[in-house]
Length: 163
Image (tube, rainbow, N blue to C red; front, top):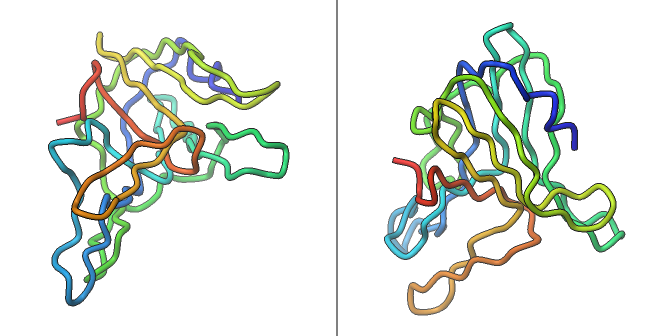
């Protein structure tokens, strides 16, 4: 949980591993990273570099048998390294330049059980970044559903998909 560790510290950089909304496949078309009906950026992890050199990783835990899901923040040695995705991969690690930087103010906005944070907001650079333990599912016909209490991290800036 430990999101309070970011309070009052200045965020310098974000790097995340993004998960595509649609896998595409070799014979069914390209990997789809965004869609007009999905107002979120979907990731499986997000690294945060503070100006003091500290690095933290935001992850969403899978159900551990307790029936609770949630986001957690842990210290890591170094930022994940941005890289080009392999052809056909639904994952890509990249710098998240669309997320604002600056002094962080953290608020836990929804919990699930004693220690499971479902939603957290971080204000940085005068903008609100929202993180939600949820996932986007592709449905037949090219439609998408957003399902809360899941393993991915959905992100918005000021209530919209980051741009």
